[in-house]
Image (cartoon, rainbow, N blue to C red; front, side, top):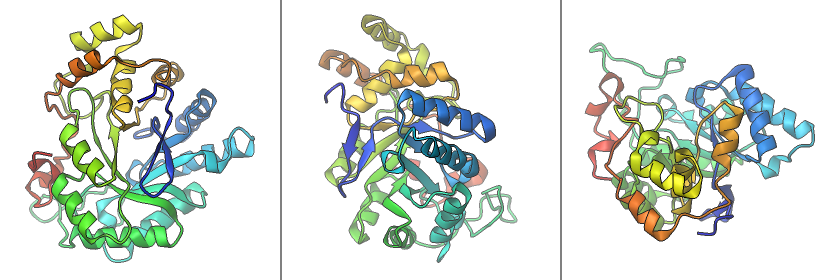
Length: 316
């Protein structure tokens, strides 16, 4: 892959910037400042979700940079997600319309189903409706029916593209088999320690691109620190780059979209400075050998691991 390739064409012809900014846990004035800085640096792709509860701030920042003439709306790519408490009949579209109203935007570029587990319909802000046993209240609706609801969102013109997030190969296969509008994206955790090579190959054969969240393996409940890996840092020193820059470059050079998170301007700049070099084939193979299958995000709250559709039971 060319070192200066900054966009990937999706199966429906739309293009997505290969590097974006994740916004989880960023809110209010902090997020507004971050988006202003990111736009100045060159970011054009922003990833959010209903669950992040930052739609108003994100929308305010986006509208501001457009009004100031720094960027046009069609130069931006904004992804959001629908939370599993909105997987009931008519609720996927309701969630997207709610998010559009909160953000003040006319449309999203990509809307994803956030997780492949259906929760009981619930409008509370907590997002985790519990049963009497203290475990997550699981809904019974098939994922294929939920995805049909997502197709209606694109047909209604509320988004340019649709896809899924955290779906395994079996779940993807069911969606692809029954879909009228094919998913263009599967957003999953991916980084040097969790390369997702098999899932990427599976999705690629179905013309689905992978987006890597947690590309630096930050956050989550884990006992490892990717950016302290000796091999990763040795390679980084050879390129006069940081471990984070090598980790991001490793993903986008494999054709994955990466959405690192940061609110610090110097980190935003550093994470974006990955288009002026290429990692050699030899070093790429070395990095691939560090795929230990280590996951930072398990989504194992309130007994979700017991759900039939819990995605991480499968090999990939």
